[in-house]
Length: 199
Image 1 (spheres, rainbow, N blue to C red):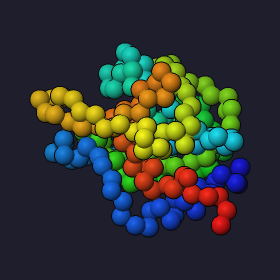
Image 2: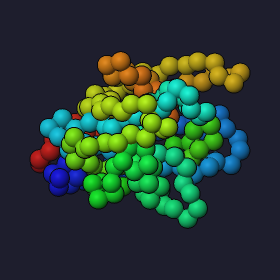
Image 3: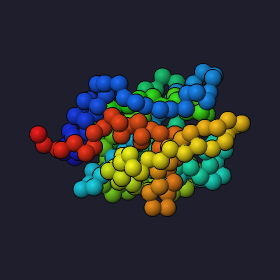
Image 4: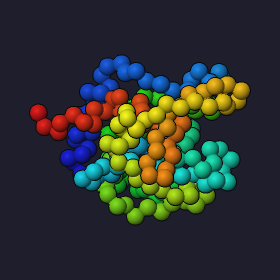
């Protein structure tokens, strides 16, 4: 899977060399942040896509929401180790099937997490084994679609007595919003996906 991985490595390095106009939810939380990590997995196929999960509707935190596989960083874990562990626990993705590209900008959530996105490449059509206690369903959305600024809509709503703005992306019948859409929007400013592959 060297083609896509090599391309992403190049785009990742060049895209993180300068300051970008990034957004997060740090203005909505004033306590110390808890470290977390997510695996932003890109499938190696002709039209690469991101792997997303729907959280079960009965979960205590973020019920029913679309997310990347991920969670809290435990003990002395690195962000990469945590993202790989969570991807295994939630979807049965084996570490040997993951090619790590690199970390991106930490996203501070309004719920108090400092989330490190770990960009990676995975083979197409993995035999995923969702953990029903953490994953209601999974789906794939094309990178070119979710990275397109025309599909990233800024919305606002009242939450906790404050007016908050957030990003929303609709892919088919899937509503990607909040932290997950915010990470995508920030990453799309780092990764020049439309850049020609040669030259």
